[in-house]
Each structure stands twice: as C-alpha cells, then as structure tokens.
Length: 286
Image (tube, rainbow, N blue to C red; front, side, top):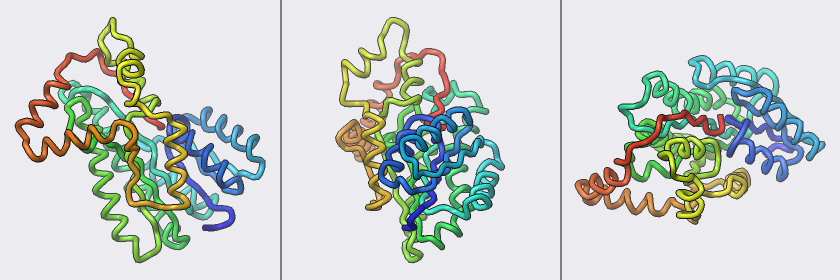
C-alpha cells in the first residue's frame, strides 16, 4: 500500500459511506480521499470535517449521479485525471425501494439497477488498470437480504445478488494480479434505508416499537459497521457478514427455502403479506 493511498468511496454523503470515510481517515490520516455522491453540500461538509480532524488528510469531492448512464465513466475519468488512479475502491452507493415489485414505478426499478448493479461494475472496469498497477483493493457493499428472496425487496435484492455473484467472479479473476476483492453483507443498519422502511409501517405503529423495542438486535450501529469494513483495507477477506445482528435468521430462512421451497414460500408470504403504506425511495448512502 502506498504511503498516501488514494481511497475512492461512492455514496459518501451519508450512512455507511460517511462513517467509513471518517474511520478510514482515522486509520490512514495521510490518505487521499475521493468522496463522491449526488449531494455536493454534504460531501463538502464531510471533507471539511476530515481536514479539521486529520490535518494531513487530502480530500477531493466529486458530485455525480451514478444512475446516469455516463456517470461511472465521468467519475473514473476525473479521478484518473486528478489523482492518477485509486488504491482502494469502495462501491458503497446504493438505492433501495422497499415495496412490492408490482407497486414499483418502472423508472425507479431502472434507477435501482443503475446505481446498485451497473454503476459498481462499470466504475470498477474503468478504474481496473490503476487497481491492477497498484495491486489495490476493491470493497463491494452487498446485502444479507440475498440469503432469502422477499417480495418487499425484490428488485433491490436482485441487484445485491448480482453484486455477490460478480464479486466472487471478479475476485477469482484478479487473484493472480494481486488485486484483493471483498464483499460486505451488512444486515439492517440505522441509515436512510431504514428510514424508508419506517415510512412503510402502517399509521398508528411506531418505528421505535417495531424495530428498536421489539427487536433491538436487528439494527446495527453504522459506526460499528464502518469499523469492521475499514479493517478490510489492512486484512482483506472474501466475505464480511455482520453475524452478530440479523444475518443468521436470513441465512436460516434461506436454507429452509432451498431445502423445502413450498415451506419457504409459505413463510415468506406470511411475513410480507401485510399491506404497506405508500412507498418512499431510500437512497442508501448515495
């Protein structure tokens, strides 16, 4: 790893991306951090915080909408032009729409596909020459939801399942070249995505009651998750799951559904058949 590694974090304006930037800067105060998301004002605030807390940190903010077809290419081009390439790429930006597939607007489905699946693949491809040259690290933020298909997160889960498949294929391709590829599978985290889940809870039911009081073990603290992800920069792992949270019930249900599909269908349908309130898009760490 270079003395002043270039670390690119997508979706850095909030959630995991913001917390991860702070944690990595604490561990690598001489790093050069490229922060990207749609919201420049939030990126600039984060960059100011990093520079004030860690004076040796260098920051570069690049606003880009990764849902746009040319977004990944424009981002990669500017990164290479301004800092020469990257040592660590964190594909974190994500978009979730917690509702039934039949209720989702087609343009929102297309946006999820663009941000969650197309953008990480294309951005990585554009930056791959520098990652290979520097024997860098790629960290892809997936989701534990891929353990079991749920109707309320059909499109979102499909994009994350695609990321998991591509992650493993890419890791095997790049092993001989010295590039490390890691997949992170967090469970529910208290970020903007969970706020959108809150918006779907029927009137009269408190989000705190449903999530924090009834099942406090379901949601992880974003700073705790960021600390674990930051560790991958020093000690890369094929897969990092937040097993102390809610991942293991997803895995158990997924195993049941695989061994006995009719039973899996019955359980999942019963868990997700409640009518939901009007949907609200959750731009998770975008």
